[in-house]
Image (cartoon, rainbow, N blue to C red):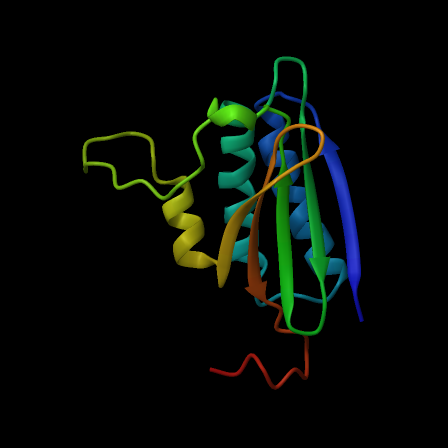
Length: 143
């Protein structure tokens, strides 16, 4: 079984909460309660990063969710051109205790069962994360 859905969000701060709600409602409709809180938090972090660092002026971002029997894959697509090394590769930061930013990908790294970055054509990137699905009755998610 493979479920897929996606939704585009405008480049506005309120889109972050809309993206969280989209992910939560999707996972609930798919019967995936186990990873819902972690996915919801990671959507928030990745959507925030896309809005602040990855979208071209006037362009929004896309959230895509895929689920099979084993994993939920979350993708956040943005539009900023990274070719030619103009944009740095997203990476986990290690901010000081007094820093007010820089923890988003660290949170994703802790909560997700894997994450990465892929180039997107014709522009932008995809930051993805995956989570054990935990479908009811699944044996792979005990422990």
